[in-house]
Image 1 (cartoon, each protein chain N blue to C red):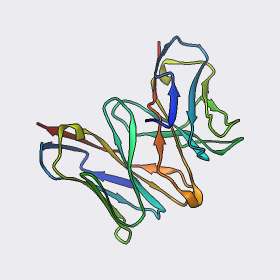
Image 2 (tube, rainbow over the protein chains, first blue to last red):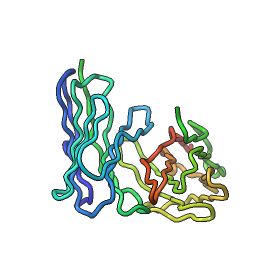
Image 3 (cartoon, chains in turn yellow, purple):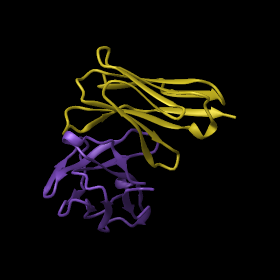
Length: 109
Length: 114
């Protein structure tokens, strides 16, 4: 069993839909990261969080430390949100990141 | 605008050639990483560095080597390229410790070995 599990693996949505991507982990962490990778290959860090909730534009990330679970929400989805969303956790301030396999999101117009 | 730079963006090279993939960051981050990623697959850590003169091998065995002579520079070298090295190579950095920062990625180098 992977230490970081994401679901779903693939997700297709219609433009405007509310989207949720889930991430569960089985290890103690110092922070959880949500990353976005577009088809061109570049990766952008969306959020780094260790508790509670963060919001940036239409994106919201939440984390429940007790349940070892995080969600990434996209409100009013748009075709430009189509990308692979990757959850990663870091263990300790010096620890390397452990990555999930990613969720491929496709938003249709 | 990218604060971490990788060159070249694309590289096609013949078997047996020596290549160096460049990575530089302007943020003064202490930790730097090299990841390998095949199309549609997850990232695999091949090398990382805690700081100057510190390099470690990652989770995925790799025939490449790295060096960290300056904080901002973390080049990756393949002494003799093979077709099995064809992949995307992504460099990343972050600040660890009390000023823990998110991970910053370069745009990647797509390597094809013929």
